Length: 216
Image 1 (tube, rainbow, N blue to C red):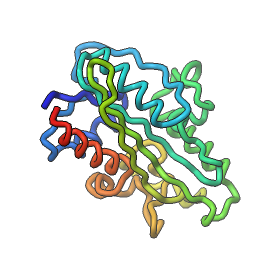
Image 2: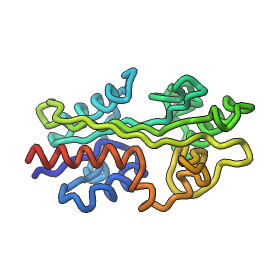
Image 3: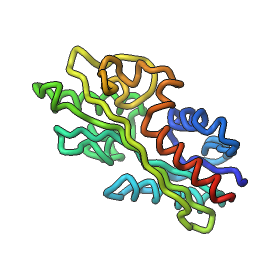
Image 4: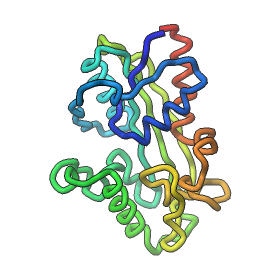
């Protein structure tokens, strides 16, 4: 079975995915394993599947290896599905250049969270339903898409003063109250707990099955 590159520049995702693949027997490495810096492809797709495919194909070509990419984000029903595919740069309306490009990921996360809480202000708990979603795509070095999978993680966004809470995770995790009891945010879950139920865990589980079935 060939080594598979997980195509992301996000260290949090690399750490999380390596944990999820740990018992699969699949050799997974991150882009940080290469002695070069890769240009990030422009993610101009309108869906999570389109953006994951863009990344998988671009990094497969750049590395000459099988590449696994994901596109994930937060969908909030009261905001008509926003922030959606622009979750990582929601505070900047999806713009990744200019001021957004000068900030650390943590700084952008904070501004993104502030915008979400501001836009949901005054909306009651029962209408704050939300889910994290993750779509994964595997491409071979020739540019052929071999598999795609998806997973979702249900919950709701807490009220101002109730959230943010928790030090684990990244992005919107400190705002996201995990269903069905809504007592803890996903940032208050241990990595093991989160890896058992998260959107990425579900997409990874299906992807591992697909990879093993293919016998690459």
